[in-house]
Length: 460
Image 1 (spheres, one colour):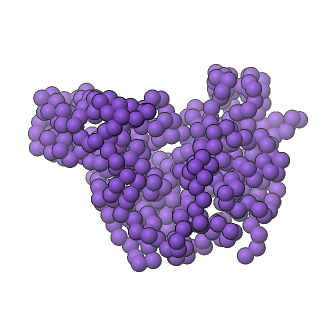
Image 2 (cartoon, rainbow, N blue to C red):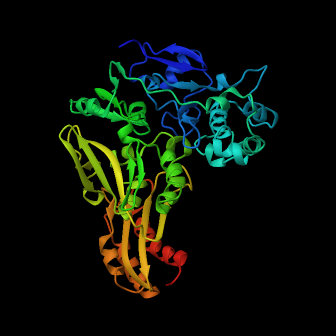
Image 3 (cartoon, rainbow, N blue to C red):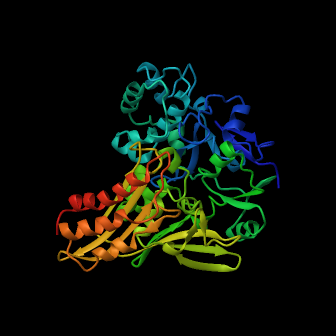
């Protein structure tokens, strides 16, 4: 297999010497493209943001901002990357760069190239080009340490539509790069699912898609898996089917892709996505990766538990479907067997009409939950016909609040019943004291969450 290459700012570059643990950020800086910087090494500051040409939802290709500090350089093979240097130069600034300059949006300048790339991704988003509205959440993963957000937002809001001759805008009308098989020491991009499953059956092999979790483990904790098996481009893992009996969501779809492709079909997930980390992280993070880490404080598991979801697991031995309520077996432990991979998440239909997601954290956005509660209820003629409540942050695993559910089902949706069930909910799980919250606080949040839902949904 010949040496992999990547297109950077329109120029083909060899990835020689870019084996793990080399990140895309370090490799790009090694080329002299030092605009992107390492600020946190865990995807929270956005100083490392760059643009990737990826399959689009509203156009054949969309420029997507990602955290270069988390992505292995080898994962860029065959891809197209644009850094802040590739958007414009001092004599011909890109519209994003120009607006930031004239409106004082660059203070110390450390974070500016990252802001430029995140803003450029939103600048070229097809839906924005049609409406002209700039989604400020596109910058939710970028941190300005000078706290000069006002001029940055003013620069974003001043952006018009890309000019007709804009070459990066025109690039979105053509197909994205075809993924190419890659085999370098420590990293393989297989040419199909069958090869991926064979590789994952080997000792020390781990799957990688968005790398938003594994990248942190590598950067901050020195994790060095024996072999990274890239599954992010496997078509079998990138399906999204909305049928009459269930919705199937491919494990390798990013959360941004899922949100946009579902188009509001699962309201409970729509409530989760804006509170899940930042847009930069959601552009890389996958639903399979979020479940694969089995974190007890992940945001998606409580919602998926409330949706009564199942996971479809595949390996060289075949396929099996496991209810999510049976998937978690202990702290960061699951029923996944060696060599087994999450292929998709299945959400049964019809959905419960009353749904809500309550995330309690120290910050409104881009923070880890102290407690997460997801509700899915069906209330018929004033009586709770079904209830599912998923919880995160109150036990060693995400859990269902089955006792509180039983206290609701078959009874009137009324103040006294809700109060009784809320008291039970407050006693659910085994919350602990840690740096995010005390056990007592977590119990209080559980109890008041059902009262809040009742206030929001109204009496039947």
